[in-house]
Amino acid sequence: MLLTRASPTLLPSTSASPSPPSATLLGRSRGRGGLVSASSPAAGQHRQVRRSVMAAATGAVPAAKLEDADALIDSVETFIFDCDGVIWKGDKLIDGVPETLDMLRSKGKRLVFVTNNSTKSRKQYGKKFETLGLNVNEEEIFASSFAAAAYLQSIDFPKDKKVYVIGEDGILKELELAGFQHLGGPSDGDKKIELKPGFYMEHDKDVGAVVVGFDRYFNYYKVQYGTLCIRENPGCLFIATNRDAVTHLTDAQEWAGGGSMVGAILGSTKQEPLVVGKPSTFMMDYLAKKFGITTSQICMVGDRLDTDILFGQNGGCKTLLVLSGVTSVQMLQSPDNSIQPDFYTNQISDFLTLKAATV
Image (tube, rainbow, N blue to C red; front, side, top):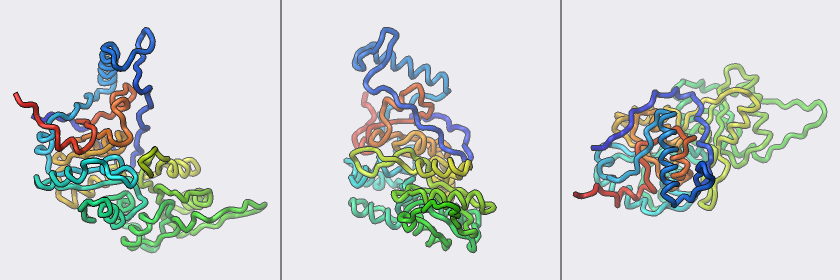
């Protein structure tokens, strides 16, 4: 029998994501007598005690290591996969992904790919999947760029109002497809402010929403323009595609994520953003309605605790953490971490090899 934890109370879609788990010393465990070797029996006992203390303090059941992949696969109809750190890292496909996706499709499972990365539109992500040799159609892809446009549609955002974008081309393309006027984006990346005596910066009074996503062209002009719109335009919305601390621009290291851009606008406006990406339930609600999915029949697979796993838990899904991205087993089992998935494993290709133990 496949056991899963009870789903937590659903969080409102506008809630900010919690702080990521605190970093811990890797490879060492501190005991009463000093540092203990991670490979010693004492270290193992110490880690178990720490995990037990963490579980008792937070009420969370420690995640189980996935041992019977077939049982998990058979228990759900749909798998939602994060992309960065699960399917690929940067522009490099993670080993075993094509075979794993093919196997799940052969079993009749619906596959959906959800990413907080807003730099591309769904069509652009479709081309990335194709370039990596993966057969994924556009209707199976949900990026936070699309979520921003879909949210504006869901609230009947006035078509005579404009959206100022701090972000990249993906957001612009999705706004265009949804029929919304926009300004900003990469074209403002070269703009500078000359701070002369008496200088006054103008802004468009018809901007009714500022959408902030990951932006490699981020600058002070954008910070000031977005701040003026939010502060001075009555009812102007502050929408964030995500608050991820880091992202995978390459497979060599972690890079500052979209949360750094969102944080700058939050700091200058003192206003919390409405987050449409993970772990907000907006995308989960949208997917459940679009495909007619019961969330208890979904397994969310991701590499981040505070976005992917919390996204699944907020939506009432089963959750599987993979260690192929930003989260290590030390972070998962840290007493400072209160977010525990149902299961964890090394990478999604473990679905091909992990079978129930035979008696």
